[in-house]
Image (cartoon, one colour):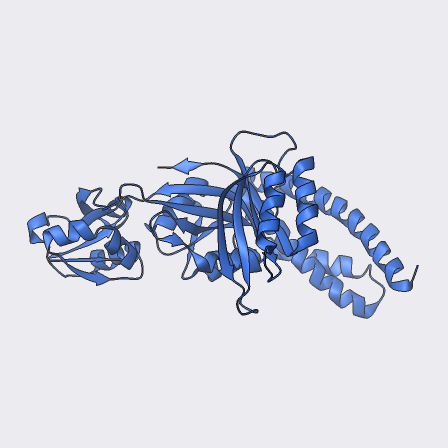
Length: 365
């Protein structure tokens, strides 16, 4: 065995020991969190942290390694405080948009409205989880009316986060205006282009002029803060309560069946129990070689292991022109002999195979 292999084996053994010690340390941190919660103490104790750093770094003899050990300690304290905060206050969930946006409503189903943090883009919300600022991010994957959300699918394929839950939120648009405004007073409506498109029949019937905004909730917020008259917004009914508006009419969608599928992205893969459960699903992403029959071979492998494919979508690979990756949602338990065998077989013909996560079917209305 060469020196590199031996060194890697030693690293693996040390990592195994450190993982067990890390879990023990975090279990003690949970006891500390409980004590702080019961006694009204803050999570952060800067004086205590500095005392520990000064004490512990002296245990490392090599002066250069000691510098890195100090960094390690600070990172460990940061993780410990984040865990304690989560235990005491609940998980913090990122979303894209402003309060009242449909992503906000989907996120509130999972974490409540007090533990949400908004960001201006999908990537910023995704990166907030990577950086440890949030525990999860709720991002839209697909809308039954408008189709895939490609930017989120690309983040899911390229990034290291996992999907641990899917929430299907039925989209119901309402016409909102300032209190005291009557329907016959409305001459202009503001909203996101998709919402305007989804309510085009209603808009045409009433002869409204339309103005596009970046977000349905952003339009609601702007109207609430402005002095304009004769203007309404198209948004979720919840925006009326959030921004002090009045609901003039509900359910103005042209299509009654309008649902957005949101994914909860987290840092850890939640491996399911081996026993199959009703409603269990998993998300798979993979690439195939650019040759005739390559995709068919992959699909045949999936089918031969009796997993029902709910959908299959393709997206172009950014780094390779005319090459694609595939985003697939399947029914069943991946943590079974059939699931493990399927992954082994797929890896023989696919350039990349990754289980993005598992979840149980969950629809919110």
